[in-house]
Image (cartoon, rainbow, N blue to C red; front, side, top):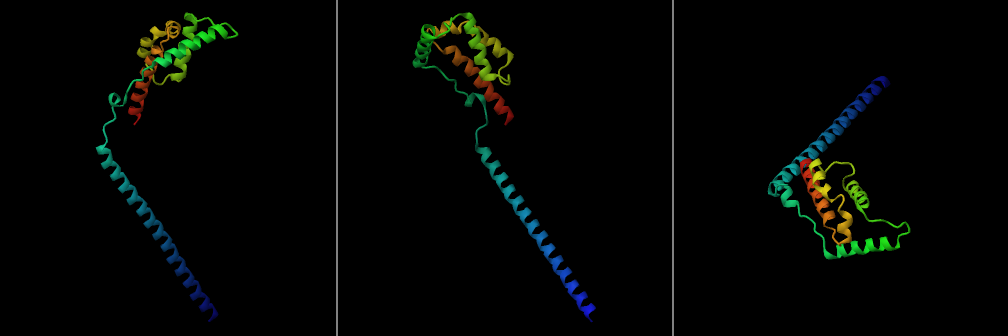
Length: 161
């Protein structure tokens, strides 16, 4: 009799376990179904919203930077101060200009991901002129180089998207 009671108790426990496992599976399945439906709804809403967004285009996003008079004045004053007061006596010549040019390009595109060879060839005309333009109070070459870099950066980002 005791054996029979134990058998019924064990059977009851097994049934409860099966129901519990079934409930856990059911809850998990319903939860996953909910997440899937919510994700699908978000995706559909994003697609509808994306349809109203303008297409990514370099020409619409690109707006070149330009210098202001204060930039050139500051550059000229800085070079004068460096020439007159720096302890090592900096000489502003074509060699200085070439070093500044290389460092500027390295700071902009050190990993060489954005600027193309024809861009480098185009801006190479500034290599030995930076000293003269900076002393004259013009920072236009720096802005011209940056604008080429910025345009290439936008092109790469749009391509990646």
